[in-house]
Length: 115
Image (cartoon, rainbow, N blue to C red; front, top):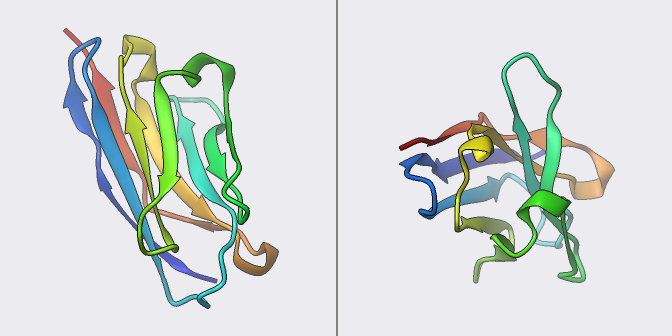
């Protein structure tokens, strides 16, 4: 299991940008799948984007072309660059990691998009 520390998030206007970061500690140096889910009030978490050990990425359809997930220079740290934000992107965003197939979650960070 790893400990995940998230940073970033906050408020933005529609069309604006925000960047989320997630650093994993307490893990081996091997690469593993990491990514972001988001959760709307009263709903289940939904996958936003993921990056796999081979650096391939996947996105949900409504963020494609607007969000970019990538690994930082430290390979157990990722970021999610969110651009052209929409009001419907407002949610709590959770980082996750799966070293050895064991799922760990970050504490969550609020993203609010409003005019």
